[in-house]
Each structure stands twice: as C-alpha cells, then as structure tokens.
Length: 506
Image (tube, rainbow, N blue to C red; front, side, top):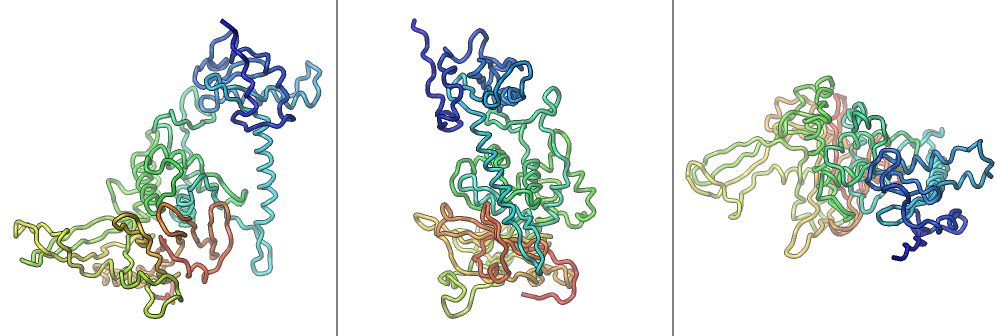
C-alpha cells in the first residue's frame, strides 16, 4: 500500500485563501504524512475524540472550539515568548498557527483570522468618533448600537431594537443574574455553541439578556446577535435558515418562548421570583397566559371580551381572551391610498383601524356560530371589547393578505399619533378607568419596506431619552418626529402614560 499523499490544499481552508506571506509553515506541513502520528485521534488534553484538530507544526492533537477549545488554547500558549530557545520575533509570531481537521482535512490559520479580527476592531474603534452629535450646541456621544445583519435577519433586528427601548421590559432582563450554562467539572470554561448540543444547553432568556445589555452601552457601533440567533434556530424551527421572515410572527414567537422559559426557570431556578419582588409590576397589572404570570404578560398582557349573539334566538355568549398584541385590519375603503399626500379624500387613521376591530360584525356563512340553545349553527354577530389594557399596547397592522396565488401587501399610509392615543372608548367599562390611565405614547415603530412578506427590508424607529432614532441593522441615525410620523407603520408600540396634565388626545 502506498503511503497517503500529504494534504497540499490547506492554504484554502476555513481561514480563507492565504497569501504567500501568511503561509510560514508550508514546507514543514508538506512533510506530514496523515493527520496524526503515534497517538489516536483524540485531544491530548481532555482525551475527547470529538472534533480533533492536528497542529501542522508539532503534530499535536487537540479538540476544537465546539468541545473544550484546546486547539485554540494551544495556539494562544504558543504565542508566549520562549526564553529557553533563541528565536526571532517573526518566528515567535507565526508559531503553531495552522491546524487541520482530522475528519475533513480542512485547515484553519489562527494568525490570519486574528489579523482580520484586529482590523475589524480598529475599524470599529475609529468609527466611534462618528458617533458624536451636537445637542444644544454641546457635543455628546451617540450611545445607540446597531445590530449586524446575519443574512436576512433585519426582521429580528427591528424587533430587538424596538423591545430594547421599552424601558420597563428591557430593564427587567438587564437586571437578571447571568446564567451559568455549565456545572461541575466544566464550570467556568467558555461555552461554545454547537448544533449537536441538546435544547437544555441553551437559554433564550440569557442570550436575550446579553443582547439587551450590549445595546445602548456606546462601546461599539454594531453588535452581532449571532448567539441569540443560534438559540432562535434551536428552539424556533420556523426561523431556521436565512430567508426573509415576518417581523410580527417573530415577535410573537419570541415573546411566547420568553414567557414559557421564565415560567419554568432555567437550571432549576425560577426567574418568576424576580417578577414577584419587582414593585413596579404589581399583581393588578398581571395577565396570565398559559399559566403563571411573567414580565411578558405583566407588560404586554391585556384581556379581550369576545361577545357573540345568535341572530335567531338572541342567545348571547361571552368569552374572555388574553392577548399580547392586537392585529388590526386596514379598512378596505382605504387600501388604494398609498402615501400621505397622493390622493384626495379621507385619510386612513389608526382610529379607523381600531374602530373596525371593535365594531359590531355579522359573521359570514363560513363562520356560523354553534348556538347551544338552537342546537345548531346559526347566523350571528360578533363584537370585541377591551376589558383590560396592557402597560405596553402593541398594535399590528395587517399589511399582508393572501390571494389565490400569492401574499399581497397593503401599502396604505395609516396616520398614527406619537402621543396621547386615547383607548377609553374601546373599553368594556370605561367609567372604571381613571382620566389618564387610557392614554398611550408611542415608543417604537417597525416598518416594512418592499412589496412582499418574503422580500423587502425591515427597519425600526424608537424613542430614547426624548430623542428619536432610526435603526437600520448596523446603522443608527438620529431622526425627528416628522419623519417618524410619515412612516408606513407595520407594528406600533405604545407605552401607558403616567399621570400628567395636558394630554393630547387622538
């Protein structure tokens, strides 16, 4: 049997195609016959046989970053200057930089990748100077941080930026203690994510907390939410891949899974205890959805009363449904109006959409009501009332509608107030609410740009400390209320106003 030919394609491995100046071990690598000699394909440090990598300088075998990271540690340890041997500075820098995967024979150059990371860091540090703006004649730092697009992840970025500007919701997660995902012998080690790990090794709450903490620190212009996106792939199969997704659908999945994880706790420690200790989220503000209340239901949770009347016998049926957001139809008479000034005639307003949602509606033949008195399905009417308003009112405008073959977008401009949205007339018992308890002020807007749900682009506007920002993935810019008011909103986030005089009503 002829000996295996050496791998000569290592220069085009995972670290990228390297220039000749970055191939210092080419001659010594070509002398290597096979991925390892003398020992089995297992890590020399932890004896793990998962993801073995061989150093092309000394032939030592270590586990990869998705196990215990000993291959990376071997490279880092080799960079420490050795006093027992006389080496040139150039030799010390390139020592033990190239390793090869024993399974796929692909190679990776740590020095080449480190240089790229250092260049990216220098670019980020230099761009911090561009995050300065003038307010009232004085220069201040633009502390807002963008989110990098990981491949059609603008739908996620827009929702994360919106939620990060809902102070009560954001502060709750930022104040949570960090979760140690490893215990026992592996405690304290850096955890690398891998798709072979089970769902018990990831925490959506923890990665969501880390992402919120990274925003508004001002230490970088953009943050990469790849760890959070990995967890989303793990627990939300609908969002795997890099296709464009619906931002509203993602928001609902995100809030639902945060709610479920907070209910059950993580690693046996229930985080609902913190909710009980938070005086700002009193029991009267809690709305239970699928079990015990969490910060999700305490802030976004409201209650609808669904009232159905049989048109034959007059029997009335009432049902109470909890909600985290309200999905509003854009009335059909406004669907041809595209921009604020394009056509004459009445303009569609948010109040028109709310009225359409709560008005009395006669159900059609496909939605006949099963009347318990008549013992059969009958024609009926339906009406919604809001029994309890949430602390944060999330309004979703239904801009996407299915036709026979595709999903069309309703591109109608809907006028919405930036402050003083009055919800009192939609309450079941408005007389029991205070004069200021039904007023809401806008805090964030998600906008879809484009013609279809499977294409286009998502951005977000959000208010922070009295200033409006436009979040377009990694780019964050200051904007004004006039620009925000002209946006074709897809999702609106309104925060309950604290009692203040002189409220402006819708």
